[in-house]
Length: 213
Image 1 (tube, rainbow, N blue to C red):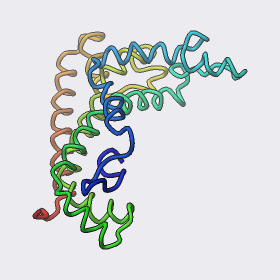
Image 2: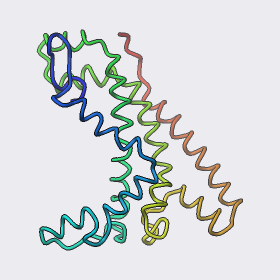
Image 3: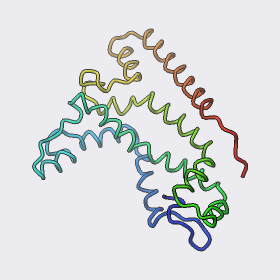
Image 4: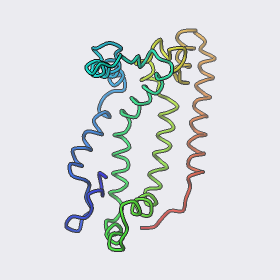
């Protein structure tokens, strides 16, 4: 949508109206430190009317939602923050990948009568497959980590009842709360090899023949 969703204008494929502004909006969270993002959302998710979400809910007569105190929704609330914080990186990554695709290919597909859905699955996605592989690797590494957001935003560092505990938090807790440095080091090594294995498997499973442009 941001790169070719607006169709052809003057022989050039463009994004939807306001796409440059949307790029800035999507990328903005990337300029913020992860800790700052956690502090911001600690106020967004505040359980009383001072919180942005609960303040809006209270204005329409809905009871406050305990985002970080409810084990059923605490993890999903943190995942929403992680998605909001990271989406700008992938916008830039895929925009850079699409900018390398010759516009003549889109023009030829349009002339042949390809709709937007067919153009996405038959043209854009195959030509961005290498970029998609890189995105999966980055996404997996971020999912294995997520330490900073959990540390700042969660209740009791991974609570309630361990609902938001991630491996990075377990390493930190064992090292600095329980003084089990050897155990924490072993977990860190396991996390390293787990990440490397995930990256290798992702690249292997998603391997395809390179399309020559």
